[in-house]
Length: 266
Ligand SMILES: [Zn+2]
Image 1 (cartoon, rainbow, N blue to C red):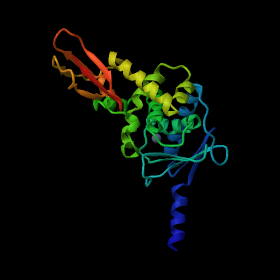
Image 2: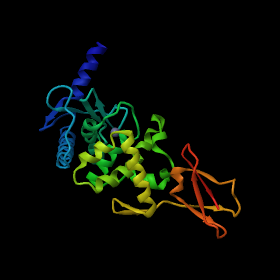
Image 3: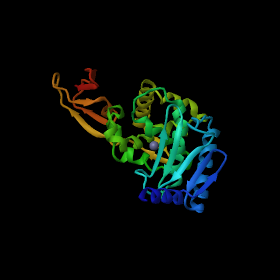
């Protein structure tokens, strides 16, 4: 009885199905399904226009999309083995979020690694930011001075921060005509690392992202004269944001000491 009731409720909850060129949207509200379907197709054609190819659906020829108020996340893309099972949204989704989930459909076909790391969310969020012009997460990267934190050291427990690292990826996407090269480059740890370091070097001079100018917040490091052996030590990612004031006239010595540290001395 209870089981039948659940089935009846599920049937009622997904009573409305709207089929578009690439998606089938299931929702109990036709207005909501139409609105969502428009965003989905808009995102799909935007990414195709950027030279990207999508990962196919796991079953059938169209991606199933559900509106489900009980879903754990505001948006969720279930990825199979090089295919997409389904996309789920809560009713309060935004256009940017729809572009983010559809970005997963495309980024998945460029990934060349098995383990999770920050680009998993940084790349789709960067794609959504540049596509919609709504830069929600990238300003947090600068505000929270995340350029001081090595993103490769952030595990899944810092998942929310992965989205903020959309800033460096968006900076590359804004400057690229064809996005396939950027997605391919960010899909391996080694090339992602070299792009990230290049971004930090540019940030040191100040960058423009989403029509906003950003410069790193700097902290002064004073190196006393004669400090031959006791050098201040800072992680390499912070070196870009430090203004070193060397006392005396003998010049500044910078030496690498391994383990990602750089020593300064006069
Ligand atoms: Zn995501």
